[in-house]
Image 1: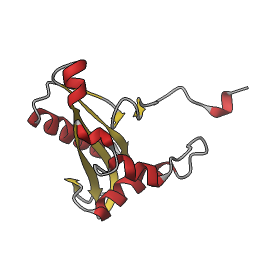
Image 2: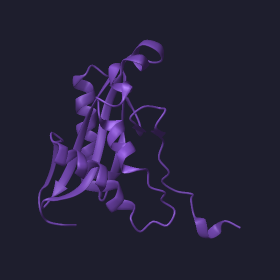
Image 3: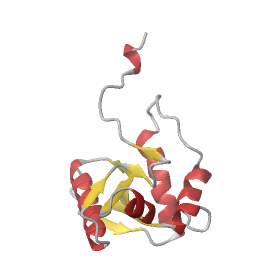
Image 4: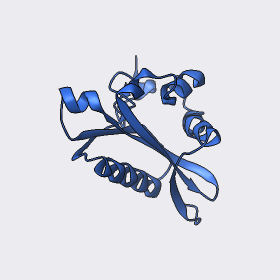
Length: 148
């Protein structure tokens, strides 16, 4: 692990948003099973001016960095439709990519803290940004070489 200090910070500029989106390409670049989304679509998903989801929801995005290099990302979101129709007090987290355990723990703790500040009692994830986008995370069981 790199000895530089880890920082987790909210994104607050167009350049940060680009780093947030591009990080997935850094993580999965050499994975032959990864089918990348169109970057323009991901940027549109995160843009309150383009995505109508933001009419009933809010999100915060963070980057984890070490030595000036991005080592993780996460979103946290509160959707009023979820509050009204499904489960009051449940926020979500997602858009989660990370390179090491320290960054992972810091990102999840940061998202949980933000959700608590929004009055949430539970965190459900990963969901990027809504259940209609990319829900779930595969952590084991996929091995293309075993398929026949």
